[in-house]
Image 1 (spheres, rainbow, N blue to C red):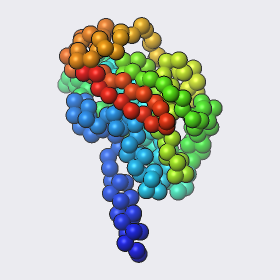
Image 2: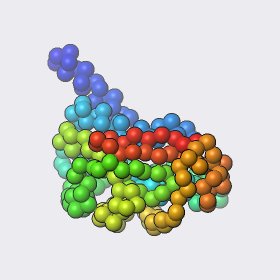
Image 3: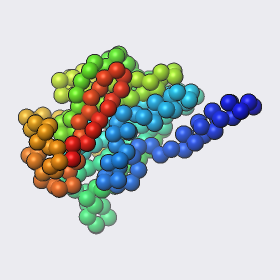
Image 4: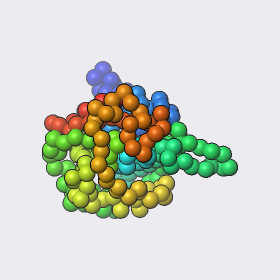
Length: 231
C-alpha cells in the first residue's frame, strides 16, 4: 500500500468513528451546531471518498424542538439511521420519575432497508432536494427543513424555509422510519421579530422567556450553509 493510500485509509477510519451530530448537552453543542447544520463533517468525508450519507434536519422553532436524521449507506443499499430529538424547557419531559429538561437529546438508531431508502430517495427527488438550492435565509426561531448529502462523491445542500415548506413531501415517510417514534411537531408560523432584536438578548422573542434560549441565522448560498449566533 502506498503512503497516499495508507493516509486516505487512515483518514476514512478516523472519520467513520466520529460521533453523529453534536455531542453533549444543549449548551456545549452551541459550539458544534452550526458546523453540523452546514454538514462540514459530511463534506469532509465526501471529499475522502466515503460512502453515501444523508442528513435531514427539522427545525421546529429551535428553542422548542429540533429533530435530526442521519443516514449512512451500506454497500447492500440499506442504511443506518441515527435519529435525535432535542426539546426546550417549554417541552419538558418526565423520564423515570425525574424531571429532565431535555438538556441531553433523545437518540435512537435503526437499520433502514434498501427498499425503504429507495422510497425516501424518490420523495426527496419529488421535493426537488437534489436540485441546486437557491439563495435563501433560515432563522432558528422559525420552522424549516434543511439537508446535506454526499451522493456518489458529490456534496449537496438543500433547504426549505417557510415559503418552501409546501415542497416538502418526505416528512411523513421519514416519520415512519424514525426509531424514536415521536410525531413531528406541526408547523406553526407566526410573525417574527426583527433579527437585530434577538442579538445579545435571549428573552426578546415572544414565547421564549427562558434565559438559556439560543438564536441563530443562516444563509444558503453556492451549495453551502453558513450560520451565525445572534446571542
